[in-house]
Length: 395
Image (cartoon, rainbow, N blue to C red; front, side, top):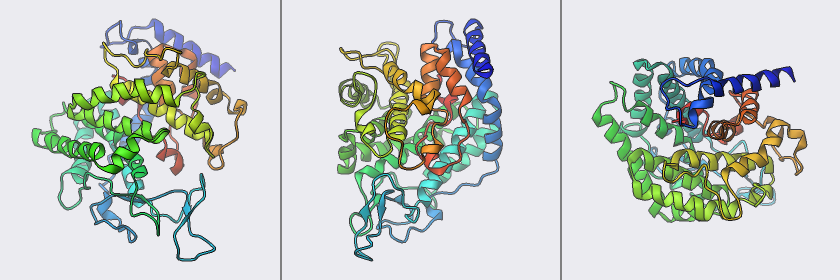
């Protein structure tokens, strides 16, 4: 109780203290300094780790069951298992139960890449030291520019199912791990070591991937998915469109958030019914709320502010955070079934709480976020937490 009170007091004091370098009218000017103080040591420690890491791309791991080549990202559907009744036949589904024997090396490499660039970009924001930008560029060149190691800008072979599909549109969710890579590139653009050719080449990769995401049948299927997959398609397109300056796609994503995602996925009380039906209702609800919140961070403008937008019956990002906050503060109050796996590993510090707290100047949300785990290590948690470096998103 004393710790919780201290966090709240710190938060309230932050609202009274002006934030250097930020306009006083900005929503971020109140609580951003408290977020920086909370994260500074963690960010610099993670960046020190990142500086020691060599690039590792999709070409470093051979996927024997992939129908693609060495430059193609490959993953297998998490919940698909060998059929005991038909050994060697098509896999069968066990919803919510991850098969640890499925190929995951490319996914792990991309998560690692995201962690490295996110940490280095966050440290660069705090210190403006070129060493962070120089090392990030080594990794960015390996993934996007070097012909020997780069990944193809498509996702034809993601979340394959042995004996059934060589790839699926549902696999597009795997590249949510590139969100903080794209955002990191935006942070590094002003660094001296980021030459025009490097920036142009990286943006060209994302432009080509955007074309694939929006024109290939896999992308079109994922766009129309009714649950978190549809949210994550929109979130990726928004992030990559902002990096590449594609205003047409940014406008499309804003309208999709307001006219499709918010009114069809969120209930009037702020919950996500389609996620609550799953075998991991807690984890999926948090995941979708994080994605909704990230969309607001990416797409909001002074003239089209998704943070304050609400449907005629009051559905909004604020209502979504209000619904889940009590169960982040005290998971024992969760009124629905527990998740079938990883129940004990949630919650960790979610971006929805910190980004929402800063926007709405809500000290209770910030205090809850501050006392949750900021450095999760469980692979399943990391996979479902693509926004791990909130400082990158507090623009």
